Amino acid sequence: MKLLKNIGMILGVIVSILVVIGLMDKRIENKLHDPEFISKVADEVKLPFVIFDENNSVVVDNGAMNIIEKISINRKDRRNISEIIITPKKYLAIAPILESLDSKIEFQDPIRGNKFDFIYKRVEGTVTWVNNYASTPPKSKFRLQVIMLPKEKI
Image 1 (cartoon, rainbow, N blue to C red):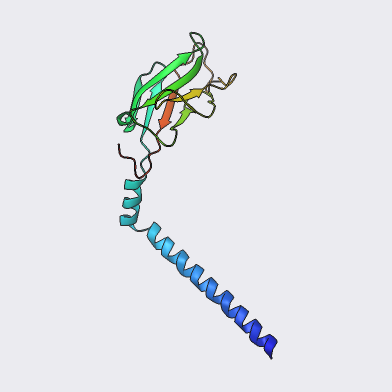
Image 2 (cartoon, one colour; image 1 turned 90 degrees about the horizontal axis):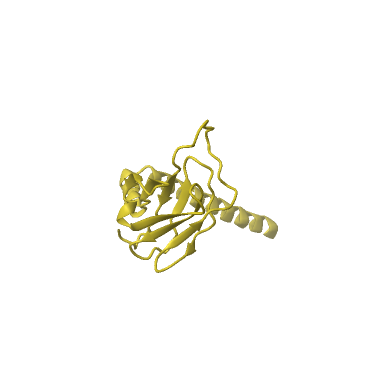
């Protein structure tokens, strides 16, 4: 009799936990489809970005140049980029994400430089173009995505 009572209590606890999890799932699902909630999240999570080429020409700016003071591209020689230095206008807690768009140039994890700078050194031997070109490849383009914490204002 005592064994049945204990089993009944354990089953009751398990059922209660499953009901609570089901209710939480339902609330989360409702929030994910709530336009007001999505709007609040979009306002808080800002990922401004800039697309620039190897000559420091800005191709697309989606708010990042309000945060970035300067982008400097240093070369090993006339053709090979050795590092890219990003100079923000103010302190950024998280390093921006730098990626190559049309060539397979890989960068090491950024290191902090002078003042607020982030230095992205190219990984040696990682330059291969996505498309095959008979002559010289076009200018490499890069996307820099700035991660803003909710406390940080542009």
